[in-house]
Length: 224
Image (tube, rainbow, N blue to C red; front, side, top):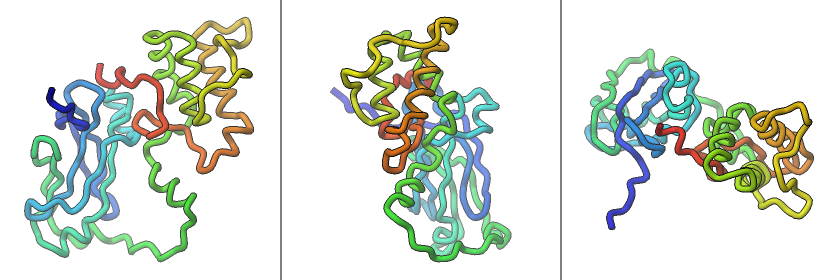
């Protein structure tokens, strides 16, 4: 049996250069697998970027609910090696953008050296793959409920937000104010968990996006 590719070929994309970083979005034709973008110099990969961040521009284009953005630093290093620099789909080899050497690309000075804690490093690593609010989690939770049922949705919410299975004190059904419909009760549950003391005490707490390692909701709606 052939192994499933963890990444998909780029079908729709936009690439720009901002402050010496290649940024944009890249989406496959279908399926939930994300795209992988390479920053190449003379056909040699210098850096890679997963198109798994949230992009407002992609959301405005109705692409994967916005979850196909990327940012790849490394232009300074690439141009230090050679003059032929490109962003490339790492799956198909398709060239997405030729980048010409231009001093204006590096107008922003290099960041000063600073000491980072382990928690700071984790936050930087997950930046872009996290949700700004539970509203961004809601479509996945609703799709999960429709496909897997109420109990599975409660379990996925606890694993995603609190990083654990629900205990005996967890709700057995989607509880909430009586005036709320079922979809609104799903949102109510997410907000209660995200505002809980347990969540706030988590080390490097964040609201996982669909490609974050802690995400447990069904993400197949991204590829529909």
